[in-house]
Image (cartoon, rainbow, N blue to C red):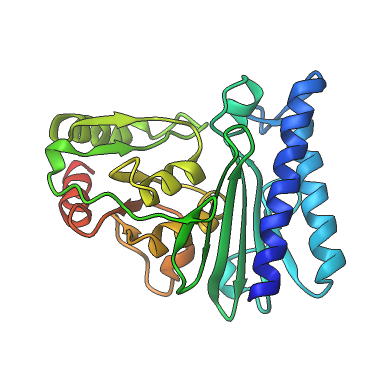
Length: 265
């Protein structure tokens, strides 16, 4: 996997540098998917760059990308090597001049996420992991925090663009605020999960799309986090790629946080 891993590191850097440059020097053109979810020309340009480079290097591989190819179907049903791409995770932050956004690229082969890279060009932080080899931030090893008390834990989450069905989310939010030290809503799921991996956050929960978390999932696992779900996973679903009720925390906090979220649901 060394060749694809090094390729991914370079590609994430190049795509990240592109989006940073576009935000510095061009007025951002905005559109709204479904009338509510923002997308900019930088999302489209970065997606095109990533897809072009992947297909040039690996023409037989498939790409699942939020912007250009979001409808390939269930990841577990796709045969052969697959790249899962979010050209800008945290587009709302990006479009509003906030620096909490990143390029996210994961590589899947033999039914497993083999490596993942999440790069924030605004802070120049590159989170990366290869399966079975640990996780790094700018080349230095990272590990989850060793917090053992839920009442001292800082937990992150996010909320969907579609505002129907908010009641259970608000109940879970209230439970976390009541039982944990504090909560953060930072606007990039990929970076939130990487922050758990790096010990900056103690836990994270949310329902997402696979491109939001595929790369960060492996980074968190390789840093010592437990990655799973606070809701029930339907029979036949691969837990790597099941997108609802995701929960990430260290080994001590995972079970009590899961119990708290389940009780509030």
